[in-house]
Image (cartoon, rainbow, N blue to C red):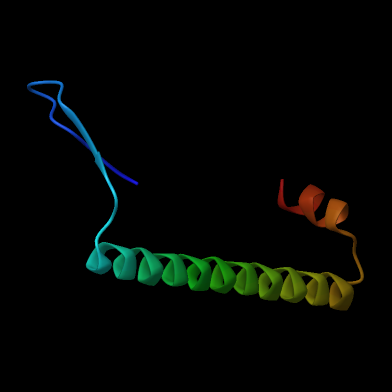
Length: 69
């Protein structure tokens, strides 16, 4: 359902989306999912790199925080 509000008059129009709007919603949804997955993958990679670095240094995350504080 699409809701259009005219701020000046307070008129509210609710209508079903047309074919083009439905297609754009699908594109936007797919794009949002892809972006979210990319961010999750990046966060996982950073966490893995951080864990590997701490392992090589032989310290815990808490010890690293103390050293950097």
